[in-house]
Amino acid sequence: MTLTEARQLLAEMTKSASLLRHMRTVELVMEAYADKFGESKEEWAVAGLLHDADYEVHPEQHPGVIVQKLRDAGEEKIAHAISAHYTKWNVPYTNQLDKALLACDEITGFIVACCQVRPDGIATLESKSVIKRLKDKSFAAKVDREEVYKGAELLGVDLQEHIAFIIDVLRRNRAELGI
Image (cartoon, rainbow, N blue to C red; front, side, top):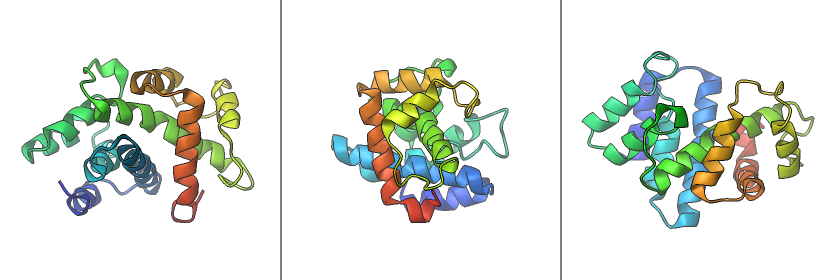
């Protein structure tokens, strides 16, 4: 599936500006990680872009609807990664794409939340500030901290370096993202 096809599918399924921004941030981070790991940038970007595509309309079935659409389109690898982007779904992690999507989803959303409470947004945000905020359970309380830690562990990256990598990607795209 090309990014153009993925964007068309997303437009059919999701209207919420905040959810679209979240998926775009994860897309950008996944694409950057694919580049770093020597993987397919388009495949990883599509996984990031579509991982929550069905959440707005089908929250009780999430991620089943988008996973089935991807399987029907012959995109089993992306479908599997999306079906595994939350550890409590008990889907095995079979490759780097699966692990990266898990590792990037919650923490990317958390970093964006950190930006929203800073006067200068992401401009001067550092990973140590994000780690400090992670310890405050009342801040962005819906973010599952276990997923953040488990994702970095499965991907085999140091959490502070992982956060710094994501901040760098988002900072390069801050004008588009409004952070």
